[in-house]
Amino acid sequence: MLRDIWTLRYFCLALAKHDLKERYRRSLLGIAWSLIKPAGMTLVLTLVFTNVFQISMREYAPFLFVGLIVWQFFTESVLQGCNSFHLGGTYLRVTPLPIAIFPLRVVLNAGTHALIGLVAATLAIWWLQGIAHPWALLSLVPGIAILAVTAWSLACICGILFTIFSDAQQIAEISLQALFYATPVIYTPETLRKNGWLACLVECNPFASLLELIRQPLLHGESASAACFLIALAFMSASCCIAWWSLRRIERNLVLWL
Image (cartoon, rainbow, N blue to C red; front, top):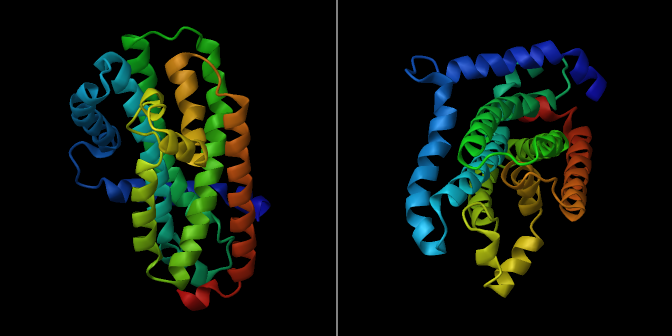
């Protein structure tokens, strides 16, 4: 399947490019909205939570901005991944294609938005705080790769579930909302230490480790801990196995369900 997807890589990129053009057609700001949305949320939440957490804006704003960018990437990948097979139904009815290419199309779109945000975050952090150890940014490469593969796997799983059960997207939205509050996107580690059960919950949450893969190099100039990498790799591996097994199970009958 991966070999076939690599062979069709230009087709997949063309689909992703087409989706971006359609999404921002007749938009004045175009793809800049992918940066405006997390930046606007960062501004609003920073004004609120700097007083709650007793933390400076200079320190909290980059922390929150990076978290929102990564979370937006996961949210887009999962929710749009639910509809990915339906969007590719026309192609699947005409010619046999590796079905995992359609969730990948969604992840590439979400990844384009996330990369724009991460570049902006890197520049903002460099301007506000400086980057003590630029070489630590190299650890972003495996971190981003783990994020992308995990998001692709989750998009495949959600796409299959939505194809079989139309309620899957609503369930995914509710689950993501609950996970948002169980993941340190808006609150700091210092806040967590004041609440024992919440700290334990976050430590068991693999999305928290995935966040740290990006935050640690950008905010602290150091690679994420080995424990974060191990948890993230374990979650990625489990997601990949479930996605691969599910795709193999339904690939021959998928067209009949669309």
